[in-house]
Length: 333
Image 1: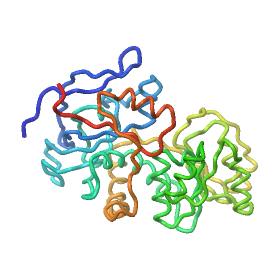
Image 2: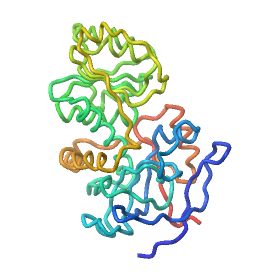
Image 3: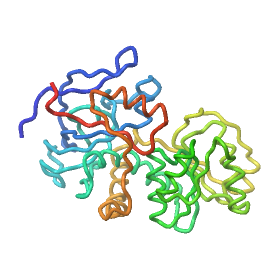
Image 4: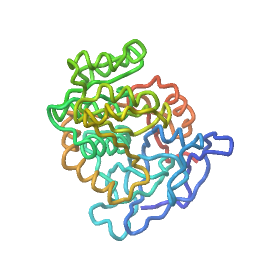
């Protein structure tokens, strides 16, 4: 297969603007594949990196983008489970806003036949994150209840569908009536508008004071103590982002009395073996649900790679529901 030496990629200039430039096509090491990108997902960490708040890990590409879908065009020497021409999606540490990227083989998954490249590009970041944090870290199980803040986001829509598929009651918070109805149609049992409803009061009323077993929070700040107030006995709070700030006060006495667990994680800088273990679980437990249509990535809008600025503006507006995707044109010069 003819692989060019140069490609187009989006970079952040010194004014924190997104510009398209020529880059060298990366080369693979023995544990990697080279992917000709068809589509790439947009995620909040991309916004933070552009703003200078979230530098890439040591050794990662400085090109934005944490998830892609495309076709394998080159293989490292230790990649026997894949072949050139395979249609795959991949979780990467950077490099997705481009025509080509490299990916560690442990974070690469074959695309279910019923999904488009745009849909497949919406899978890695959200599905790896949700599975790892809810089912591995928080040990969420059938018959329990879950609260997801930001229910209409990419993470939120993934969490709703996965939790419902495994027999869990789902509460979500959102910022509009339109998003509330969207989450209910997607399968959420209870959707609360945080602008007009107090989620602590509502959850404690609905649950007769029991609270929820697990909370997946991307907000932080003053949501932290409020989360603990509606977390059940033996409940688990999982912090995966801090959109409202990293600092909060905690009532340790209440935490002790209810035997609550507070945990959190980031995914991008974790070692390849950790991500490979998540990929294996997704393949074993989730990919069949995608293949038979029981769950489906939620796409709000796709933009051409050259319009990445518009895609970022949409994400920052928080007007979207589900995922925002970039599509990659390999005819562009």
